[in-house]
Amino acid sequence: MTTDNTQAKQTAMEALQKINAVEGFDPSALAVEYTDLNSANGGEKRLRLPVMVQIGWFRLKYPEGRIAVSVTAGKDCFVATARVYPHYSAPVDQFLAEATASRGYLPDKPTVSPREWAQTAAVGIALRNAGFGLQFGAAGDSFDAPAVDELGGIMWSGNPVDASIGSAPPPPPAAPAAQAALKPQPQEPELSPFEQALKVSCPIAKYSGKTLGEVMQIDPKALYWVATKFTGNAEIVAAAKLICDEAVKTTA
Figure (spheres, rainbow, N blue to C red):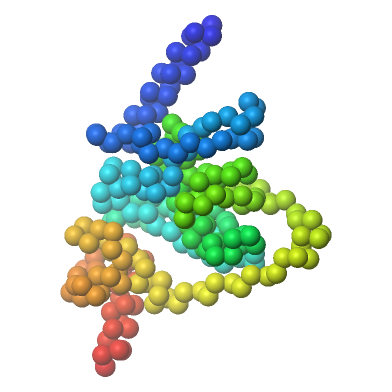
């Protein structure tokens, strides 16, 4: 029976490895080993796929795909929602997967942006939900135990809130003495609509990986085309129009 279960598990893992397979690319070669202190075996070694690797894998599978991220500021955290699209022209509601993650300030790491942390977490979970890393025990997740930080290579500690939509457990309450010692962290300033528009990804394949703001600097005609001719995504069109309008005001 044990042999049968082992063979069945191996067959299942081989099937998972075929999801989103890209010829010549083996994501396991870029996996990171971490120690799961919460495992039943106590300190079990596992593999974790960094979010940056997931993004690279996604780009290989879908060269014209799009990862859309929105962020809202809460009272004590930032909440990011990420959607993964197989093509930049896909309608807003036709995405491969979606995920939400929230992140607050870490008093012991004041230089870490909770906004970027929330964005990275949401993207990682969305990509995992789309099948990029299902064969790994931890793709796009964060842990109570220290794990490799996606934002700068440091080691995380603490108790971040991290979950897919609809299942975000509240962080454990801090001890009274710790609450008194913590100083409130300043909120990051909200981006203006124009600043948000500049950060929107350009839908033109020629400028894949560039934002509308970058395209405005190198090819204004392409930006104008997005604002007047592109029909694949209303949000992108609106952003391009806003940038064009601001450019006209500046030169007027």
